[in-house]
Length: 400
Ligand SMILES: *Cc1c(COP(=O)(O)O)cnc(C)c1O
Image (cartoon, rainbow, N blue to C red; front, side):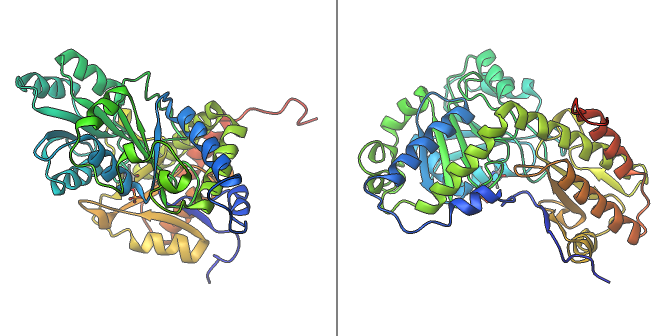
């Protein structure tokens, strides 16, 4: 028997579930792109994004996914042959680095041990050794969506400062923005990249790149600039100019609606919700791990992400049967595993439009599938319940 008919739960880390307000906002007729609503929506959306980035400087809009944001950032800041240091803690930084190489940049990669963060001292040491200051930028991923390892941007800023190195700090916040605190200006981040479809709860198709003063300075002499990406050509004028062509009107409507959902909850409340959901997921996973067949990919508990949890079967089992059972048998979609041993991995997203009830549905579905597959395990759902029970408040007028 299959029990999947009914409200579907979706816990893959991107694209993430869309709030009803976002779906409704997209039910709109075609609109004028030269004046009126589309212009106002874009202005409001940009203001909202600036607040969430914690950035006083401009946020550039690019039609495309996260990779478009990566390429836009690179194309706007560098010239062929310049050197970049990629900090690899999980898998995504290497991909961003490959993109930089294809654009003609020299990329050097510092690689953290699997499931751990990079040692800040190793970064300081590498930067100190760069006496000629040939490294123009350091790039890192705030939350690596492959391994669910977090890199602290403030710690990298501190490493740059301790080394007295002038390289730009570029952070990919695609899988954290809107879910975990991000303070671009306060942390001394020069360039931040995000995209619409993860924690920002909108459909895929918009990339956001926030640029600080030092990035704008580097932009002036960058020779990788092309007509489509070039920020200088996007600064002023109608939306048609800002987007280098027709703006994605309905994605703009969707993103503004999603930001309004986020602001109605309150950013701090949204961060606290993600912290609590992450803690409950880890509690469940730690209990499952007691059976000896499942483990965290982020081995170091200090670097585990607030927005997703990557697990793996340590007994060599493939995760496909588990994912098929949760999806087709129960109605909960998990994320596939990526990277080395990806076949044994699976990912549970707790990012964006999700809550205690939806998470319990997902964790319960995983545990049900583990039971059906005879995977040895401890009591994960019971642990998640205890964790959530400790996190929620009791309304004052309840219980009487
Ligand atoms: C999803 C993701 C990307 C890539 O974004 P696409 O929209 O798939 O191109 C890059 N970095 C991180 C951290 C991500 O989560």
